[in-house]
Image (tube, rainbow, N blue to C red; front, side, top):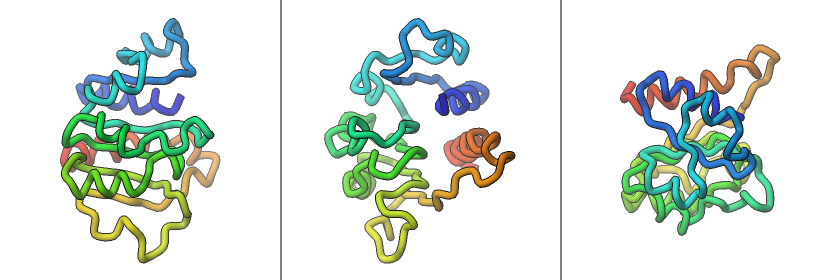
Length: 160
């Protein structure tokens, strides 16, 4: 459960946490272990969150999951972080939401077409932070990728 690592880091920084995972049952002990509020639906979660971090595989069900309609349900001036796979967030919808001010920030290291080349639709978009999708490349890296990602996100959210 990749989100579990982020939940622990966020808890350590005094953040309230809410999560939605349709594949993790309501009585799964991980909810209590992480002290995370469980949302019954994505629609329940979105308007409550100042930041939404996506950690899902790319499947037929998740492709385009965060489109213009989904983003419209998010809290105004929220952050959207896609650290999972390209194609889950509609890239044009993300750009439009950032340009309009609906979202305060976007963070991604995944794109529909990788590697990201120039020119692209992300160039010049305010408050959009793109990094290369390199993932863990060593045995040690595999163990640390969640921690490093969570720390980087929290540092950014805390203005560091």
